[in-house]
Image 1 (cartoon, rainbow, N blue to C red):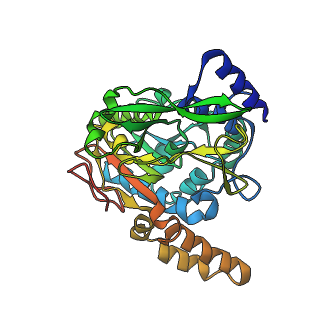
Image 2: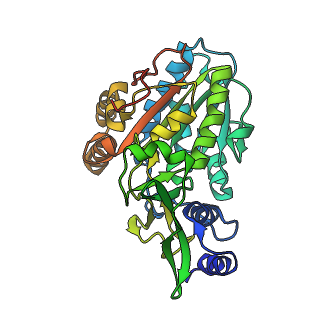
Image 3: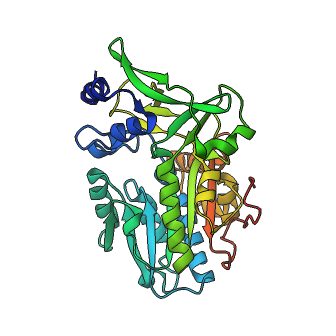
Length: 362
C-alpha cells in the first residue's frame, strides 16, 4: 500500500467514502505524496509522453496559429501569452522559437504559465530562460489584458465527478475502503440539477462525468477574452459530450488500475468539450476539429518535409514516426481534438472554422 493509500484509508474511515474528484485531487496534488507535486512525469523515463515531447513541429504549428490570431485581432501592443499546465516548458519554448520572426510579437508578449507543481515550475523556468515569465497557481490571477492562450492535455487531468443514471435520478460513484483495499461504490439515487438535460440522451446504468474545475476555469478565461480580446486553443482527448466511465491511470507508459497505487500513477479522464463551450459563453467556439486535420491545415506536412531534407538514418525514421503519431487517424490524429474560442467579432482562428451553432465536430 502506498503512503497516500494509507492516508486515504484513514480519511475514509473517519469521514466516509470520497468522490472521484476528491480522490483525483489527492492523488495528483497532495503536497507530500501527490503525483504531480513530486516528480517530472514526462518522457521515456516518466509515465506518458505529450505531443510537444514527440516533435517540435506541434509547438511550431500552434505558435504560428497564435501569432496569426494576434495579428488578425490588430496586434495589440501588450498581451498575455499563457499556457495552462505547461509540462517541462517544451511547448512554450517551441512556440517562442517559431514566432521569433513575427514582427512585434515577442515585444508585445508577456509570458504567464499556470502551474502548481514545484518540480515542473523549475523545469519550465530553465527551458524558457532567459525569458521573463510569471507563474500562477490558478487562472484567476492572469492579468487583465488581451489573452492568447494554449492548453494541451490540461483539462483531462482535472478532477471529475461520476454519476450513474438510475431512473430519473443519479447515483454518484464514490471511493470507499473495504477488505484492505480502495473500492468503488454508489450513493443512493438523487437528483442532479446539472444533469437534468442528460436525461434526454442516457439510459439506466449509463455513466456521465462532470468536471466542475474545468467549467470554472473556462468561465474565468472566457471573461478575460470577452473583456479584453484574444483567443484560446485547447487540445485534449475527449469528445463533444461525455458518456461512460473514462477515468484512467497510467504508469510507465502502461494503463493500470486507477485505485491500485494512489499518488504513483497519472490519473486522467476524457474531456467533455460541450461542457467547456457552455461555460465559455458568450465566446464563439470553432468546430471541434481532430488534431491531425488541424495540424495539416496549418502546414505540418510541408514543415515535416523541410526538416526531413536535413536528416538521415535513425534520426529521419524517428522524425517520420513523430509526424505520423501526431497526425494519423490510428494514432493521435483523431483521438485528440482542438477547440478554439474567440469573441464573436474576431476572425476565424487559423486551421479552424467558427461554429455559430455551438455544436458538432468538424
